[in-house]
Length: 36
Image (cartoon, rainbow, N blue to C red; front, side, top):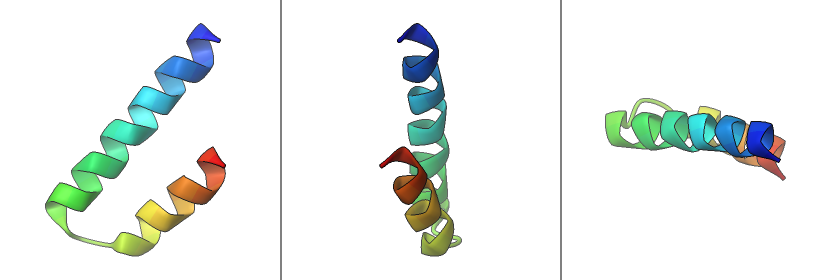
């Protein structure tokens, strides 16, 4: 579980950075699908 949490936090951080950067929403959608 700890591994999944760390990975999730990294992905959420990456997604947050991508959103803040406003570069590509496509990458965020891909990450979201992978999380689901």
